[in-house]
Amino acid sequence: MSMKKNTADIYHDIRNTVFKMFEQDPYMAYDHVDGFEQTLGARVHDELIAELEFYGKYRDQYELVLSDGDKDITDFTGKLDGHPFHFDVTTNDIYLELPHDDPFHRGEYKYKIAVVEKETGVLKEFVDINFPYCKKCKEGRVYDIALLLPPKDALTETKKPKYSQVHLSICGSCGESTEIERLNDRSIVDYTEQRKLLEAHSHQLTQEGKAPLDINEEINKYALRTTRYLKYAFDNILIGSGGNKFQITDPKTMTGYFETALEWRHPDISRVLPIEFGRKLAE
Ligand SMILES: [Zn+2]
View 1: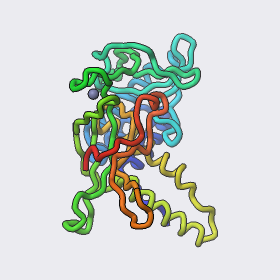
View 2: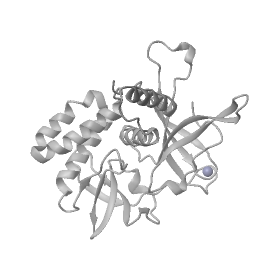
View 3: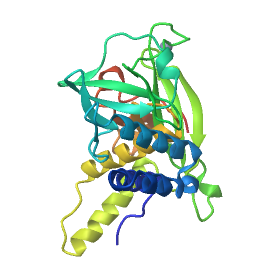
View 4: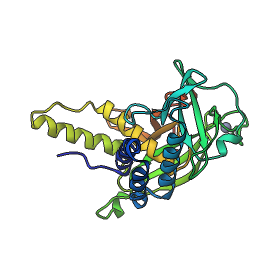
């Protein structure tokens, strides 16, 4: 028994395959991506083509290496003016318009965003990530996160429950949040459900005499894969991913409350975001 693949896993596999293919024959790689346009959706398809074009044009100049999708959320590592850096590729021009201040970095690696042209992958600019000011409190910065949510109403569930993935912007200071976009990909389950599936799978493995899964490691991998996919599906650099978690206040009666909590934060930018929000930001 193996775990069922969701759209993010399929994207992960296609990405790894096409970059390998690209080394042999770029046209074969583009054809391969085109074959998955229906599965991935037009936006994700176009971003992957732009990423391939970008890679082909700049791999020597910036010594580009594709990141391991199960270990690193950023798209590539490379060298910029002789210094190591890692970065995400986007075709979203919003990142050119934000004011720039202190760059983020992880150890010696600076974090950048490569804003590239759609279709051609031509680099417009490497920019430092920045965040707009909150319109409500005018002090905090607004961040993009993704929430993975369970079906809203268990009673109306038919055979296939309707899971949602929500793109939210949230102010790190006053907590004002806005829902930007919502997908209903049935294959991408919320973290609580994924944890249950992993535990069942791990149990199955031990019954077959195999080693159990490291659930926390698997959840981190799940977060990385889904966030990378949703980053393209939402056309935004996501710096956190989470869901609604039941927090028990009285273990005797199992009473408590639901609140939105993050399961994953972008390692380069994690210091700006809280982990728990005290209330549900969406459902
Ligand atoms: Zn605010």
